[in-house]
Image 1 (cartoon, rainbow, N blue to C red):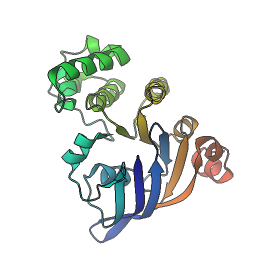
Image 2 (image 1 turned 60 degrees about the horizontal axis):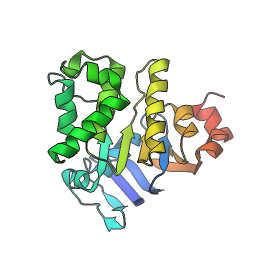
Image 3 (image 1 turned 120 degrees about the vertical axis):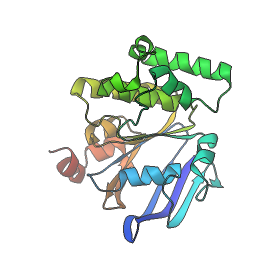
Image 4 (image 1 turned 90 degrees about the vertical axis):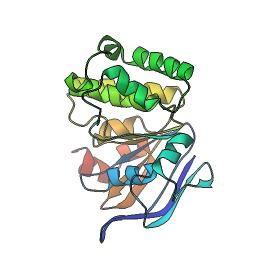
Length: 233
């Protein structure tokens, strides 16, 4: 579904990504792990079109989308749930969700809304409350729900467990597992390497803007280099 070849990005004159090659097949859950500053969020921003690329190519279902605007990518079904949730605090929970489904017909958006409420019942109970009053975990649920409202064909998840208590991390990853079970194609970035690798079909390790390891999630979990650098073992 997604193919990336030789992707390079810069912030000004500073290189951030250096020749990234990766692929995500339809129905796969692919994880990307790496330390702070490795370029994980930069890669997702390049895939969603928010950050221009300097070199390389991005293809979605065989079509070159390297120069495609972000809103065009959303229409193709590439949807990013950003790092830090970035919900619209003054708006209600339901308004935040409906904004995510602005491209969908009213009936489709209504069905998507019910699906989100079924997945995150706490949001139904708070549907009329300002999003800014939610806890961090609830805001993360809202951010994921807003992404699902857009009917993603490829869901880009950026650090969904960041800053959450262990119990809430388990809830968020349970949600990701359920989406995977529904055959949603997911590209997951998370600093919780153990959890991200444990649910991944395949995974990549990013260091200073380069992919240094790739393999199945299970193989990377047992890789000595990964265990020492990212799992504290």
